[in-house]
Image (tube, rainbow over the protein chains, first blue to last red):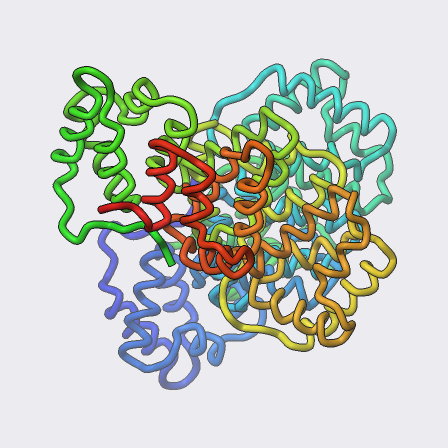
Length: 316
Length: 316
């Protein structure tokens, strides 16, 4: 469930393009007008606006936005305006140049996008970089991280609801044995998590919980300093309860000294059209304060207005 | 280049369906009529005939063929009549129940189909078996075989012609080092072979050849008894010169005592619409006898007639 509010009868793409062009003209930039348009249009509508803008003014709308805007506001407007597949391509490719948080973003894209959406990302990656997402993930990761991330990114996961209960039982047992032995990078453990459907994994983890007394994610908390273990746990969360994973990313981003605007921006831009309603519910439940209040208290200016619009708390 | 001869103005699908139905009626089956129709229709045309047959007679054409035909002739007619993606699904799924040659068929499908065709196979696998091809490959293979086959089957390989020459150089060096040390199951070696585009691999192997004095496939012949090494070498052949790989499969199938009809059937049914012209050229060159002659001398009856029709040497 998306928080994005799309007008029932929006202006035509060329009218929107013209308004945006006006927002860039004259003294200063009309940021509010940019928010009022782009934060209230669906992905296909934004694509049409980009096309109309290019036809009318000969420049990619994103280029114009880049020239006019700055800082966190620039980043969220650009990221949100992009088509979802292009956006993920952009996020993933940034990972191949940096290092630290890159593993997390590969994991997030691999585990929280639908099989169909992930396929669109791969196609957009081919078109843009003349190589595959998989080869870049394999090339830019090493050791256990590669062992986990490469199959997560590669597999076209089955998305049906069918569950094989005896398989869930036998694989829950395998997982429990490996985790007891602290073999977190075991081939079988990674095979199960990276290839089974989300419905099947859910059944397996439920069985794990009822048979072995703890949720699998709890048993994986054995060594809090182990970064690989953290990533593995997060992958399991992304595959089964993505809203809880994203709630935590936002919570840490806001609570951190100085805030992690990049993470906040990424989650809001990528989830506003997908499951932000659930993420907001999870946030309220976990923090006893609404996400709107938290964001309003932690950010400011146009950036704040854009965030609030995207999570469904704008003024329009 | 296909050897399949498709009529310029074929009868309508419902006329073909009617003729097929006639071929099944009365005393005995009219095998020649079945060949004259099915061996001269393209995959989309065969699909249309199946649809028309189902509408007119309430039964899947494949079911009717199964009832009427037997042995090798049955197998090739059924396999060829299937849509290419369904056919591969069928071949791959047979592998998950048996063991011996199964690794080879997974490899063959993964390395010789286009990225687009492999994607169609994955989708058809989801639809038919309610799980993914990748999870079955991972589940039914072990050790080094899984390590090689799983990424081969999973990656959506980039198919453009662009080549990064400095990457080709550095990766040729990595491959040579690993092969010298007999580390045939090395992570980096498998990463390169399973993720790089065919054009990129071609450049890498060319560089390997000119820098280190031997073709990579020659250096991989070190230990003739090593089954994994054989599979690795075959994968490299499939990725770079599939016609040579298939020529060899056919040659071994024909020369073997008693012939391996299953292999011959598989290659002819899967390549007739793809690159059988090149395979025939490779066969003639390597064996100084045409594939037509070899097949005519080694097979008989309706099976022979169907094979010859599919490799472009039928009577029509």
